[in-house]
Every structure is written in structure tokens, then in C-alpha cells.
Amino acid sequence: MQRIIFFTKYTSKGPSSRYRTYQYLDDFKKEYSCLVFPFFDDEYIDRLYAGCSVSFLKILYYYLRRIWYLLSKPQKKDIVFVEYELIPYFFAWAEFYLKLRGIKYIVDYDDAIFHNYDESNNALVRFFLKSKIPKVMRLANHVITGSPYLTTFTTKYNKQVTEIPTSVPMKKYERVEHSDAKNSFVVGWIGTRSTSNNLLLIKDALKEFSNRHSDVVFQFVGIDDRTAKILGVVPVKWEEEIEARLLSSFSVGIMPLVDNDFNKGKCGFKLIQYMACGLPTISTPLEANLKINRNKNNLHATTNQEWFNAFEQVYNNQSDFAKIGESNRKDIANYYSVEANAPIYKIIFRNLITIENCEKND
Image 1 (cartoon, rainbow, N blue to C red):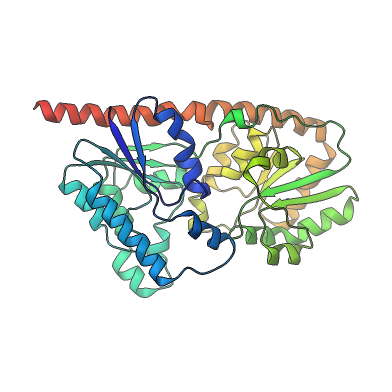
Image 2: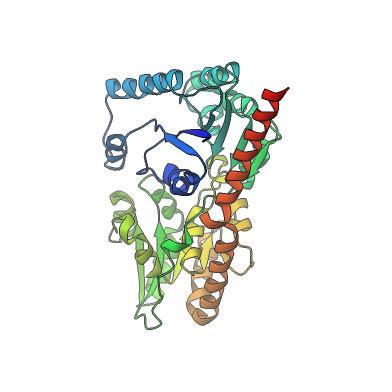
């Protein structure tokens, strides 16, 4: 059986790795032998979410472990699947090593991590590593991207590019039912400590909307305590087991973002989660968010006044936006679900295997 080795950034506890790799593995294992080697472990993720630092020795251990796995695990006949890069904040030597050995690798991006290097505040990082990710892309046999911005960037360095948005398993939401007898209008957001500061962009709109309507409730899942305090909301703890139920309690899902280069590379995953639950959405009009709005009926806003107006529009037309939410769910099933996109990954794998077999026969 063909073997695929996944070098992920995180364990399944890390959202990016969970949604870009781990949730597909059961399906992949029906056809392939799959090995997974995360760079960071659960302890790192737990400390990251708790706002705690990680010792230098522990970081050194992660680097040495990745190098050991790289040197000892992949064989020439394997396909290697890399999330972002093999060794963070280091030259593209590891990827070049795979190329020298004739090992075919796929690299996957759901964030514009190249801006961590070419727009770094550290002059040394900018000088030595600004061209790293383009080199990683150029050396790859195939590049998978999660958003239009990433696709546009990648095609400058590699023509074998497939855009696969970060997706959700529809079965996770299939039993979620929305109550028609809600006593409140719930403005919902889901994210992490590091992304919750984006909510501060619309602080004035949230305050004005709440003051206007007594039945408005804010439910911000995963928000960090400092941001929650500034906004005057009660933080809601994220738990994977109840995530779908939390989302289904929303009346509208929101995704405000600072309009910068890094955020332009985001895949709009929050919107995909909301829409999978049959919710209407309001978001900053970045390219990925506009593309996800396939029915063109979800709302976009930039200024606080636009956000307030969007809140009012959904609030005053709830039955119409409930229908938009149902249309959203159908779009997710067709274009942004694991069920729809797993076959695309397998086509990429099969193409590389075919190329490998042809090379052997030459």
C-alpha cells in the first residue's frame, strides 16, 4: 500500500492541523498507509492557549525530533505531505533534502505564513528568510492553498497548485436543529485568544446595537479574557464536543478582520463553520470571505457604521436571513465540506503516484 507521511505543525488539538489534515485521515487510510509526525505536541498547545511560555530546551527538542523524523522516516517511494514548512524559522534546507533524495512532497497553506518572514519586525528574519517560503513552494511537487490570496501568491513559484478551502464534516452538524422560539438575538463569534482582538474593531457597533435592542446577546466562543473585559461580555469556553451546539445557538455569525496582508491569506473558516450550521453571516469583505458568499446574500461590513447597519438588517429581517442560512448550508455541503473535498486530495495523491511509476518505468 502506498505510504503518505504527514509532517503537521500540531497534533489534532491544533485547529489548523485538525481541519487541514487529521479530519481526513480516516478517509485517506481506506486507500493509503498514513503516518503523522506533528512538530509540536499537546503540551505546547495547552501552554499556548493558557498564555504560558515554553522553555528553550523544549523548543530545541521539537526541532531535533523533527530533524530525526525527517532523516529516518521518509523513503524514496513515499509521498510527504507538509503543513507550511518542515522546520520553522530556518532555511529551506529540509525541503531541499527531500528534493535531493527524489522524495515527492506536497506543501499545504491555510495562512500567509510567508509574511511572518518577509514582513517580520526582526531585520535578521527579513534578510535571511524573506525568500524561504517561495523556495519551499518552488521545490514542491504540488502546493495546496486554502484561499484565493494564497493561490495568487503561490502560482508565481509553482504551477501545480490546487485551492482547497479549509472544510468541515457535514455529519458533525447533521443533527443540529435551530429553535424557532429563541427569546434572544444571538450575535456569535468563534475563534482563539490570538484572533479575538479583531472583535475590538467593531466595539462601537456592538455597543450601539446592544443598547438599541434589549434582547441582543453576544456569545463569543474562545475569546480571551482581556478582550472580553473591554467588550463587556462573558467569555464562552470552546469545547470540541459542544462546538456545533454552541454555533447553532447563534442568530448570526460574524467575522471581523483587520485588513492586512496576513489576514488576506485566511480561508474564511469561521464563515464556513457558521454556514454549515445554517446561519447567515457578516464579515469583513476580504477576498476569501467574498468568495465563500456564493449566494451573494450574506452581508459584509468595514466601518462600525456598516457593521451596525448589517446587524440591524439581519435583526429586522430574521425570517429572510433564516432562508439565507439554509442556502448557506447547501453551499457548504457542495464546496466546503470534507465529503466534497477529500476526493480532490486523493486525485493529487494519485497523480503523484502515477508520475512516480512512470519515472520508474523510464
